[in-house]
Amino acid sequence: QNGTVGSTGPEMWFPSGAFEGELGVQPPVGFWDPAGFTADGDADLFKRRRETELKHGRVSMIACIGYIVPEYVRFPGFLSPSNGLTFDDMPNGLAAVLKMPSTGLLQMILFAGLVDFAYFRSDPSRAPGDYKNAGVLGVPNG
Image 1 (tube, rainbow, N blue to C red):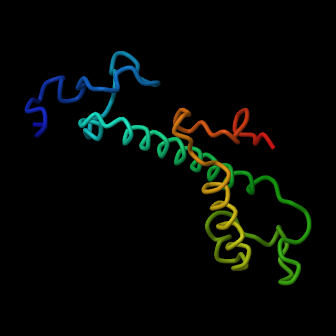
Image 2: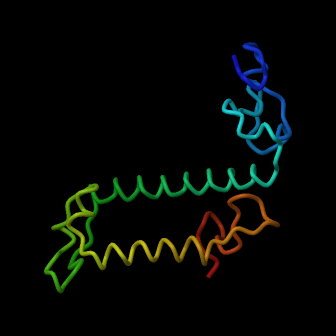
């Protein structure tokens, strides 16, 4: 039994709410929120959760590409000339993090932070995940 609805019927799994008209709501399920995160109807929290969901999905897609592509394609030359480390010397997957120079890992983290906190800032006047600088299909406007 759901503690907030008090029933084990369809209203437990398909509750009506304030967000029935949002993008992605489709029959027969309608608005799907089995954990009840939006039961309070707070539009600001809903928008923040939608932005977070989109961002995590995008990061996951980039991570999958970064995991798959090195299995088939390697850049020629050196990854770290001062350490004598070539791209061919790098292992695939998470083992690459252990072999990567710490300054390279720091550069990656700083770049991700720059993109997240400076370039792709959320704008309250735009839809969740719609960034002003993102351009068409996420390609930056320049």
